[in-house]
Image (cartoon, rainbow, N blue to C red):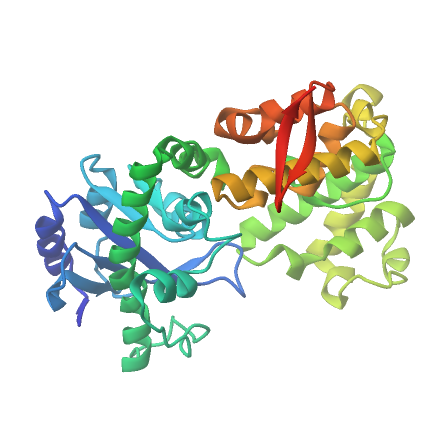
Length: 385
């Protein structure tokens, strides 16, 4: 297989791709020791079975410009096919400001087509392409050079089999009329906001047991400092301090370096220097936050009372709908959304777009007592009340 190491060779391959209906794309990267992913390899394949139709692109080679492939990503006449695209797209957006368009994600399509929850590439290769993948190179160090033959074989397999998987799923979506369903899911992947992490919003990902606005103000300040520090130094946020340490700090509110030394969960490196100074400053920011700038707690959701019997009925309805439509249940509504619906909440994903057509409308009717559920043989059916 060809490994492209020059801009000229990359441009020549990309010229061959122009006019093709689609290309398949995958990447290999490292992120264990950095905040941002380090792109180590790009795999691309064109339709067909010629060995020259699939290549590896080495972005670590000095002087290699990725502009030819970025130009392909911008070409709206060519579908860019990925599997579980989110992390790949984040790399191209963060590094180059480009999101491939139009986009097709075979993991999303497979869930819509009834292949289960978060179906893996290996499973699709086995079930659709009838092939076995050697995954022994999956967790190797992709930044080391030269790449081994095993690594190259593994990497190129991630785009060659993807061609057959894409063509199969595209046909199935056309037959079932569900292209729009996938399109709605792809919209989120195409949105730049999906890949932008703003330090001021980082606190929203931290799980806490308290909804005290003042406590959350301290959590917000600590999370903002941690995210800013991690981004500026390109280190994982957990290397600064972990979530459990953050919550402990927001609870105990240390005011001095000596106080920090008593923390059970804080890493030794965080008890001195820039991180320690940042922690103490963030805590003071949270404590001194003006009342009108405190985090807004969604009190209306806190007050919602889940009707457990109705939640159970919604789960039965969801199971019946997913079996009928052959769609992964979590793609329609996770358990948390069912509980929200059963408590009176309506601003959930299951009440929008194709999900509303498949499940949301009948879920509302069930909540309103307009329909009931009954068994017919081994099936659960909806009956009018």
